[in-house]
Length: 89
Image 1 (cartoon, rainbow, N blue to C red):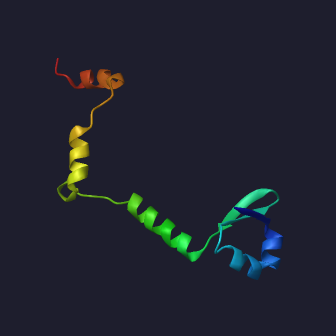
Image 2: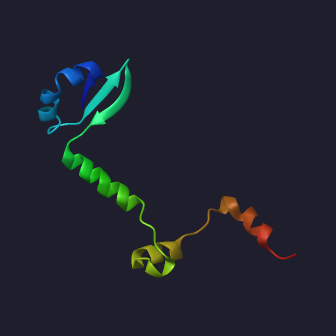
Image 3: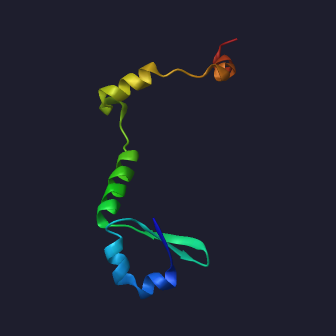
């Protein structure tokens, strides 16, 4: 990844437009990262990953592999004391 000062980035923007096709560019101001310049393809991939990570399902809509994962899930034994709080006395 290329790291560049914001002032240089703005002065030589057309050069970085070509370079971003090969690798992301980290833009810094006062030695602090202010952002990243990425290609349209990388941004589209990021958008797809973000959308997939936010997928919400109604229980009736869960894909079969997720239903099975929920059915197979087990609480860690360290939390058994919480289950005992729910027991009728």
